[in-house]
Image (cartoon, rainbow over all chains, first blue to last red; front, side, top):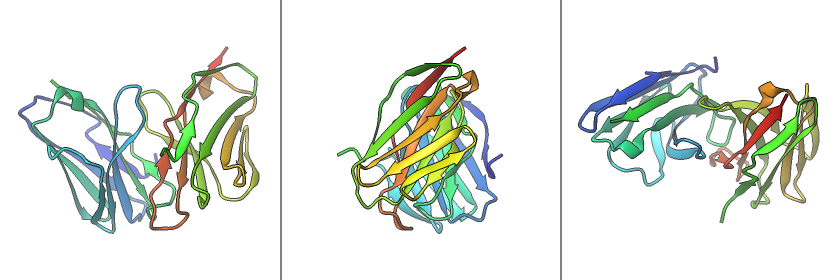
Length: 112
Length: 113
């Protein structure tokens, strides 16, 4: 248990659905991250939030919409996804942006 | 220009041997270095952090940092099949709070019984 909780752990959705991934950290950290990891591929950083403000968007398609209402919670809203978006989505947090990141268990997403 | 380079492997070692994982980086001002382990289908977990030149030991794991040569390595002594995983090298390229961690692509290690 790293103190970073992601829900749901598994998600299957159709291309026309709208769903949200949730991440919550209980570590008092100020930075939170979304990563995508496709099968047998390296981590891809998607978004970075620092003190609730988005500081990085790595050219992520608009069908992925992040939300950070406070420093402890991070959401990733999904709509009109494509089959190639099927992947493991990982949330992480750290005290500040350059510090050790602690990862949640991830959400395994399948888009049909 | 890639900032963190790792051999993708796979690296295969027999049980009980020493596994050596290497990482090179391009930014000379990098100050903080980390090794993560990721089992297949699981999330990365932190194994070691190292900030100063030299060796840092924790159980069967030893991290080695050489800032002059810009490399950091991870040695796993008495390798066990349970060590089979992908090992990710990460660093803070700027060394301060205004930078984010940069991850390498990882090295897949297989320990054969």
